[in-house]
Image (tube, rainbow, N blue to C red; front, side, top):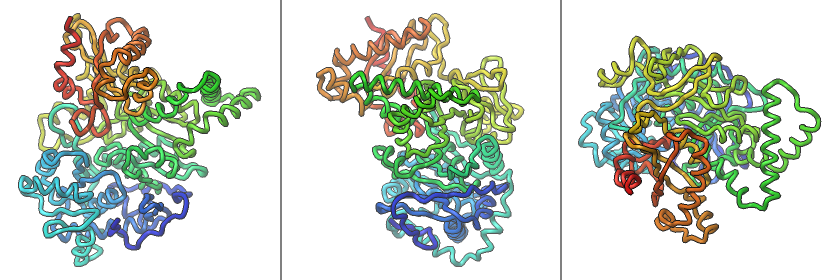
Length: 617
């Protein structure tokens, strides 16, 4: 792998990922470029990644040397301050280095999801009027070559890994072009950027229609990260700040983690870009902090609990007892009461038998974990909490620069998404929609004044989420305004609660409810590809997805699960019939967003016949 952006090759780390042991204070910067320049003299590791079987480091001085080199290269190829450049890549250290270089050149970054089709790439490049695009590898370059003629403003394509060509620059070539640009040109570019200037265009993944480009300023980012720094106590001597990077950096959730960690002098630890190796990555990287979407937590929850269900009764009983002991200890800790001697002895045994093994799935050092971007079942949060992993639920949007509300270890109320971050006002409109106003709220949608006017009224953002705010200030999300199902009897049903309950079944990976203007609710389900073969073996059914979807024995087991769940809900919220899809929903087919949320309108349209069939007879 070519690491052309580094001033010197990083030495391999012999056994374990390196640690950043001293937490520096926030830079206190007003812009992202200024934040980077202020961190230039920091000691410690900025980026940590695995390459060629060894863990490697990029120090803060090396990161800034590389960012300056890239900035000079961008200036040399004609990128002016305020012009857009794009990054088309999976989450990897080069993404962050390119991002840093763009900010040091005063450019505006318009990221593109690495899973996007050539046509979707063309939309972002043309709409943003991007002058240059960084591509991860030859596969991503090939996408751009297919559509480059449709993007007249795009003048340069730069590949992060692999060879260039007559029309594609390598990073080495970009940096070489920048050698003619004086060093102080970078400082001048950074100084010319004001907090109110545009920092990035983040294209919402969107569950319907083409993506909208959220305009986020430098001030939006700095307000967001400073308010999060105030809410989260990361200055712990026993826990170096090592944030595990897994989510796509094209999404604002991952992006805020990136700049937040760099602002406080922590270390970004990158996954190896292989979903099947995710748990191995955790064990090797041993992060102390991790933020992700509910589907990842649900997957790990399933991995931690599914094997237990197949064990003999004594082992299942021990597991259940251990989780119960952990829950009692956490309740004592939260109330400020020390556990008694008997409970401490029980907890020590439970920790040895079960709880520590769950923590070790994440490397054993996870101090704080965050789940956001979609609803999550309380059962999942309670499980990890009982095992000693503080998993807090948060809420935010691209339009709020990811920061919105968050629970903390000190202030937590299960079932809520926490309190608003500092400086963010929230209230509930007459129709139940949550409204938000503050310094982290975006300035509008690029080239779309009509959509901007719909979203912002007197500085208040209409979030599209329905919710409540209790007397203590904790926010609860009850559903998406546009996702409400209105049955033929006129009853409003938020589908997410039942969908989440169904997904807690080890056999089910996705659940999509349907029932608008219908007499009752139905569901389209997908089987978990890792757990379904175990069910097939248990029932003596061929482990073929197509066969399993229609097998009477499989359907009987799913019906049993559904019956158990239905009794928890009011009659109008219960699912009467279901269909099982013979494959998973995917991003590639446009059914899931990059943060693994279902695209409800797409699924309703694509499987219209299947849903209609559930009402026949």
